[in-house]
Image (cartoon, rainbow, N blue to C red; front, side):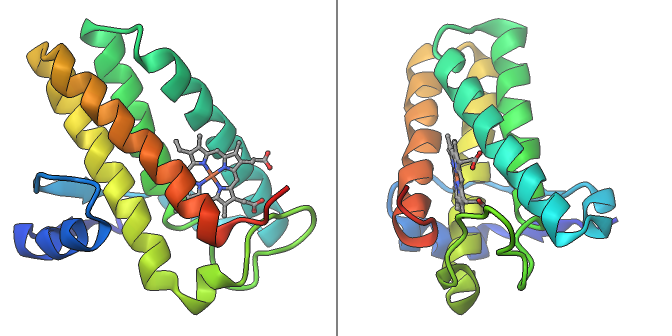
Length: 157
Ligand code: HEC
């Protein structure tokens, strides 16, 4: 099973580069192995569906608490982890709004996804601890990654 353990050291570099997060923590990124078998057209449809779903989760997350808040954060962690394998080179097909910059500067693109998983992991920890202030801050952190990535890596529509 493809699973990347990011050490605290590696994360510190990512966090410093992204600069929107003021904490470092261990995260695990485990994409669904079945996604690798999708055709480029299916990859586009899948990642667009995930993006839309993330928007919906983020919109509703502020009103959640307890187990529902933990589940929302878990869903975001899964979705952002899956996005790390849903942008292979050559998958800007059909109605995709993916820009070539994704493959010209893939390290930066992937780093934003890592910071999104990191923020969603902080969101989950805060939800588990019942810390509403940290929870709301983490939601804002997740939300910041959307625009940060779209600005550079997605066609303006
Ligand atoms: C690491 C980069 C990245 C992050 C983070 C990211 N997006 Fe996207 N997003 C993209 C790219 C690239 C596309 C275009 C995908 C395509 O059409 O192939 C896209 C497309 C979309 C779309 C259009 C989907 C469609 O049906 O065409 C929506 C809505 C969206 N993103 C919402 C979000 C939200 C909400 C977040 C944050 C919770 C988010 N995105 C985070 C890169 C990102």
